Image 1 (tube, one colour):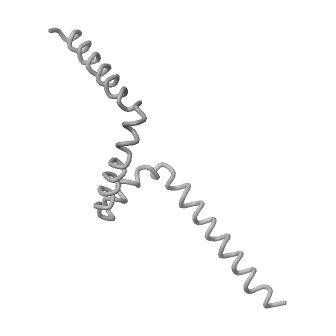
Image 2 (tube, helix red, strand yellow; image 1 turned 90 degrees about the horizontal axis):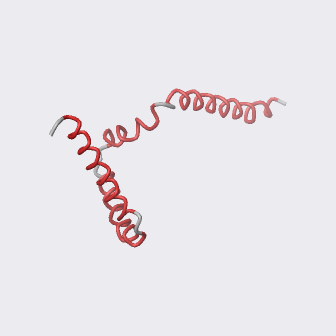
Image 3 (cartoon, rainbow, N blue to C red; image 1 turned 90 degrees about the vertical axis):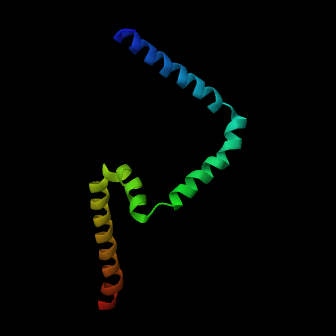
Length: 94
C-alpha cells in the first residue's frame, strides 16, 4: 500500500466513522434515554474539579474577550460609584 492509497484509506475510514456515529445521534429515543446519564456524567466530573481546574476549564472561553470585560467592568463600577455618590451625598447638601 502506497502513500496515496494509505491517505485514501484513512479518509474513507474517517468518513464512514462519521456516518456511523451520526445515525444513532439522530435517534430521538436514544437521545432522550441518554440525556440524563450524560448530564449526570458532566455534573459529577465538573463537581470533582478543584477551583483551579474549573477556572482553567472556563478561562479559554473568555480569554478573547478578557480586556473588553475588564474595561466594561471598570466603567460600570465607576458609573455605579458616581451615581451612588450623587444620589446619597448631593441631595443632603441642598
